[in-house]
Amino acid sequence: MATHLITGAGSGIGAAVARRLHERGDDLILFARDAGRAKELGSAFPGARTLVGDLASPDRLSWALAQQSLPDRLDSLLHIAGVVDLGPVGDLTPKTWHHQLNVNLIAPAELTRLLLPQLRVSHGQVIFVNSGAGLSAHAEWGAYAASKHGLKALADALREEERASGLRVTSVYPGRTASPMQAKVHQQEGKEYDATRWIDPGSVATTILTALDLPRDARIDDVTVRPGR
Image 1 (cartoon, rainbow, N blue to C red):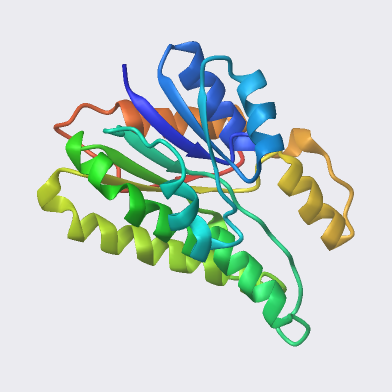
Image 2 (image 1 turned 90 degrees about the vertical axis):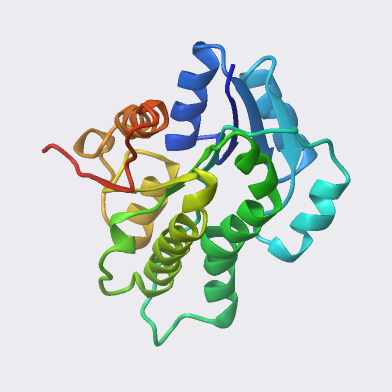
């Protein structure tokens, strides 16, 4: 039975991935920002374990994990949590920049650092759910795109550094996906939100599981998923 640690399992793509892995009997460790959220995730996924830590405060993640029981080995680390706040560069405050960089880039880097020993034991896999914004930036997407461009650089560097350990590293670049985050983006853009126009989270989950389940004679480094309409 494989063991997976997932951030962002409470909604959207993260919830879809967690459901698939839970249904097939894999061992889940779900990362929660606080004890209340951990209780909700535990109820949604019976038998899953939880870890508590605030991705918005990556400097405290090492302390938080040191207070909790970690697995001896980990088959995958799935970075799916993310935040977005749009705005022109001329209006973005340091607080807005820090929040997106902390959650979308620095926290994944720190969690990866802290869990690399367990991933190396299993010759496991790290999957970074990035974004189309990690490949190109558009007006008012500066801070979010910067965090996602950085996430691509993190994945590329990690892949090269851990090649000898047998660790696989995959970046997934979904286009607009029907989720609470996408609803927030539409609100910020002043547009009407129609979930049927966008990728179903289950379709991105299928892509992620394909990368996870690929035989060890191959690897998927980067994969882009776009709306079919």
